Image (cartoon, rainbow, N blue to C red; front, top):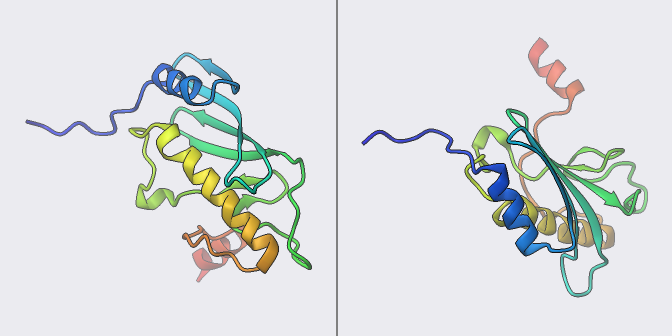
Length: 151
């Protein structure tokens, strides 16, 4: 028997699961090409609520943004959020694509959204301590990438 490669979960299945778990969220789907989900996450009982936007585009992967609050607070003296692709856009770094930690075979409700909640919990701890306990590997920023490619 031959193993199937990247059996993507249909976006209609993703949409149904998102609706069943997050009934008050907003979802828009363009057939099997893209899906956008906007919902509220509260990482711990003592946490504030965060509005999160998940965007999937076929062959582009999943991007996750914190949309409310519009500007996440920064730890005293810091100019950037930890472990993000963009502080300005509040685009989170949740997995390292090269390691295939997330694939199109996974439900967002079992992977990306819990990872977002975990990121938010570590963010709240970072606000208190100034230390990022969330771990993870982060690809180099463009300047760093350009530098390593020249060497």
